[in-house]
Amino acid sequence: DQQVKQNSPSLSVQEGRISILNCDYTNSMFDYFLWYKKYPAEGPTFLISISSIKDKNEDGRFTVFLNKSAKHLSLHIVPSQPGDSAVYFCAASAAGSARQLTFGSGTQLTVLP
Amino acid sequence: EAGVAQSPRYKIIEKRQSVAFWCNPISGHATLYWYQQILGQGPKLLIQFQNNGVVDDSQLPKDRFSAERLKGVDSTLKIQPAKLEDSAVYLCASRQQAYGYTFGSGTRLTVV
Image: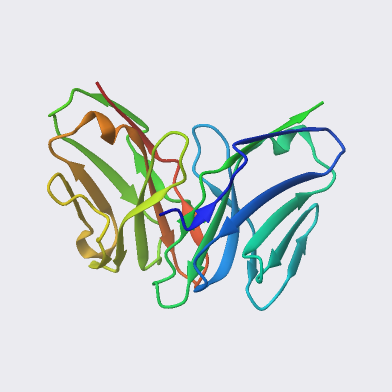
């Protein structure tokens, strides 16, 4: 039972354009959402997060949008840079779950120069 | 601040052999996690420690996997005996604040 789903295994974008990565969840108890970035042979690194009381959070080139009614979140990267090429994981946690993270399967983003 | 240290980085073993992974979390981080990431999937929680006590090991295959965190600092994860399907990256993470996870670089295990 996949509670967090990333339906696009891969995405290619031209440098300078917008990258949009999507994530859907099924557990209505999730109240905190995070995006992690992973390069080969490295552990995931935290990118940006959003609480369920917000619908948008912005940090430089990265913006996360949350649509609670649709149980959907998205990560926008503008403008995309070749160094953004990595696997992006969406993760969610629920209060009372000891803040364990449930991850999606990831999306490989390739930014073409 | 030093990150989460894991060793070894890579390990190749034959099925039915045993293997152990080591994790040193960030100093002062009370919560420690072990995740298993199979190729093409997201990380899956195996076990969570709070100091040296187990908070959740419901997804740990206890017939072959074991983990301990002595003195609430370093942790080891052991597999005995290993199966082919255990081939994965084993990630250790530690946390101090509510949401501040930090992951180590992981140990890539290949079982042949």
